[in-house]
Image (cartoon, rainbow, N blue to C red):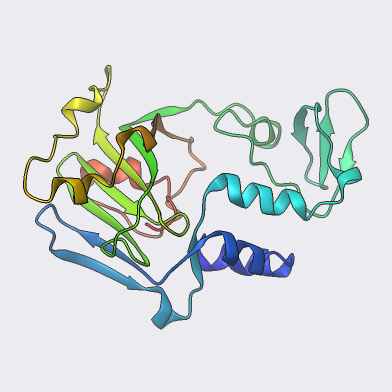
Length: 238
């Protein structure tokens, strides 16, 4: 959660509960494959209050703040109007001060406001994993390692946990299997680096589409040329 998101949550009275469930992050680093520092973003020095938090924990915190009678389930939103009306498929529209179109890459909200915009494959594949992991080398920081045609990033979503994202350029074709991306570590202190029992690892794969002509780099900077489309997703902590 970047500083502007924390400010928004604070205005809703949710800052403290998010701070309790997440992990405070004080800086972000970008490194090359040799471990050399390329960029350091010091959140603390800028006064940016930033957290790592699991999406499920954030959603639960927001859910608990909503009066039960205001939560509507089993209803499909089919679009929205400029005047703040959310159009529903089985009942009258709902009007609010703000309509948040957080309904995925095939967004009905976006389609109702801007029309059909064909998706373009961004040329990358991403593997994400999360595990219980406590290590001083993670600490209060987000780290990205940029390589040729791919990279890896990690950070704390909460105390004593770690999430990681590996990306690889896969233009026009079936993406490579994970074994081509990750090589087993065979050096000393192997038990320390693997972070414990592999059965505690939760892995999921996702493509990285470009969301059409209205998408933009919310991270505010671009990576190497072969990472450009991947960077346009503006992932948290980047």
